[in-house]
Amino acid sequence: MSTTQDYAAAEQLLRRPARPGELVIGDKVMPQWIDGGARFWYAVSDGAGRRFVLVAPAAGAREPAFDHALLAAALAAASGQQVDPEALPFMVIELAGNAVEFDAADPARRRGRAAGVRHRLRAG
Image 1 (cartoon, rainbow, N blue to C red):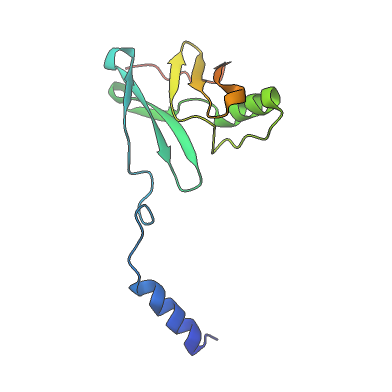
Image 2 (tube, rainbow, N blue to C red; image 1 turned 90 degrees about the vertical axis):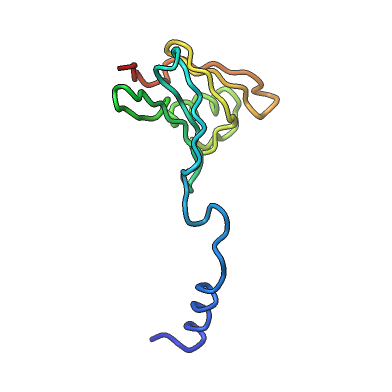
């Protein structure tokens, strides 16, 4: 059974204005066009972390740009540090063939190239 204090606390939460990004997540997409404009990728925060998505508009297809867990495991093996797949140490990627290239935020992992982690989404 709830107390008067519980109701008062809940009421205070209802009165407070929502903080930016608190109610809507994943709403900011900045497309990075590739393949002459046939496809694009974007990074999006989903509340739990950040993920990279690859889109082929003509095909109506959208999927992860690469295997985030596989790349995190490869980075962890190379650096000896734990890497969270939802918080990869870079903000921008370059898709090159069957690889993803990136500049890592950590100076020890300044530039990287991971082969075999990209999805095979093709344009239309």
